[in-house]
Image (cartoon, rainbow, N blue to C red; front, side, top):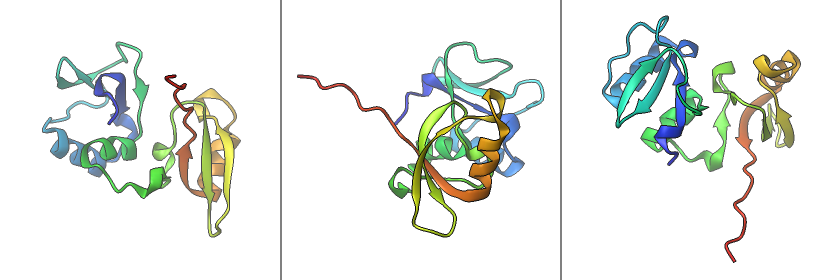
Length: 140
């Protein structure tokens, strides 16, 4: 499980249904998203904030759900249903293409960090992605 003190989720990118599901999971009533859009885990409780107070990585709704429900493993693949499901940072990923067995590797660049065509291409042509995670160095 990811360390909750190192992640946050942007509530303004979620549907009402997704927010309700998060409320039920963490037992926290989410209010005033327009004023406090970020949900962070701070001092062992969930809080809403206007900004990211420390260096935390934004996680998508599917990643958040997977943290708490264990989610279906799906072999590490994250289903792409909307732009909210895509990575929030520049990252190398495997991409599963629509209607075929083809899996491609590529660099994902979010809209706010580069060319919109990358996001548009992934949304139009891919059903799932899996981050390519750099392995830890050997211990001995």
